Length: 408
Image (tube, rainbow, N blue to C red):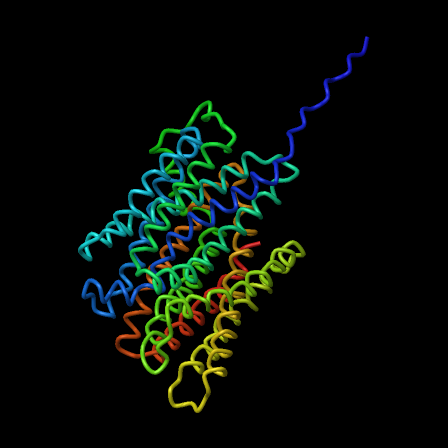
């Protein structure tokens, strides 16, 4: 007698409200890492920090991001993610309140280090949570929506920080963020589906060593990580230094206006979505070369926009600056999509750790770029910043040309 097999269990589709919660929570979490960029001049003035050293505040958050990727993100393989998310969120709220109440530069930098750690850990943990909770047939849609929330939070962070700082000072931004994270925590506690702890979790030390082994052994990860390091260094150079000339004479823009330039990057993010489809067609390397060339060329309008000797009106300067921002963001976001499409082909059984390793290159590049950008502005002005950014872009292009045949 033939016995019919039981039909396979079909996992229910994730409700749209939960998808939106993952996206919004990721955006609000990652924004904490970027609020400081348009506020550097206010923070520097408040604590008497020299302009050339103000980038250390942003660097602290990026160092925290790197530490989170190495030390905190792997914890998702050892304990239930829901409990881990809520614990990390609570510590993040405390760190944000500490930043808002800081009375010394050292205390502020320490608080920003913790903000960077927990903001990054929350963001990457939510992406992993969404991917695990989604059914196999909808995983791309769910993760894509969550990643979209990350990019939106990154871009809008500068706009929101500038507006709130103009209304109530830079400290108010971190008070508002603490309240927002508390609200997100209530929603996550209410809506996050439970996930069991791994049946046989790897020891914590072994998890960390396995990430170091991936960095040592996987050539694709090394190469695309190197490109990520350089491209995000160029990105950090621009965004950390931009507030310095625009807030000073002769421009004297408000922090709201400066932060609004981040909205121009939305165009680049939308256009970069085509990069993934090009990679699927086997054009990833060719598209990488085009994006890296654009990363260099973007500095031409960015440099011209704020060159005092050019007889340009304010509308023309704003248009050039917006054009350069669109080009810069398009290049960076396209490269991010291409990099991830290539590294996801590496070690499918260790995707979360591969992504954690890759994002460490991103954090290191962003942090060093922030310091280099403000330091260069102090000695070379905006022209020096643009030359530095273009030079880093050229280095990334040269690195890609040298290594493009080393990976499949």
